[in-house]
Image (cartoon, rainbow over all chains, first blue to last red):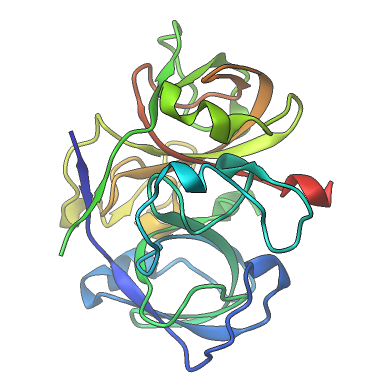
Length: 132
Length: 132
């Protein structure tokens, strides 16, 4: 039984040379969410970090040959679940990005490792704001 | 255009009193993955932490009334994207769990905040193993 997800917005960036991971990225760009979600974004603040869950929309379908892979920065083959490979059983990506600002339904972020037009599925706080 | 996801396995736990967040949970349980993925799990080690992305399969559909909510541990209403509420536009959960052991397609974990039979969509390392 499949579970259907729908994009809540899309990544927008002019950059073509997107780093492989947010851990090594200082690329800035926008998360352009659907206007319907403006009220849900109201407590996101500059300086905090957010988890962005997204769809690897350009990835080929996962098959057995992607079960164990050699990541670009590693010298041995490892299981897909020990990597952030974009080719995985469910094509879900996870990045932890710094918020630079929020204006309406647009979140300006730093640390992008997603391609332009990547569909965004969810945003969650790294820390719940009342814990900070 | 919907994006279809399929469970790669399910949570298994006897506990009924599941804490609201992995941050305050010491509940142990199993992530029982499909046998097809055994080879993909081979590099997950006891002591490491893994991100588990899962389906909030018991949540009601998201509607406008869940856009801003009062979390149980907070005294004011905040936007859904500043919370880990199980009622969100795409019913995707994210937990960071400690690995106690791996045996075949079963990962023993600590920190569970998911109900028994929760569908698991993805597992990713908190740190890539070659960075540790």
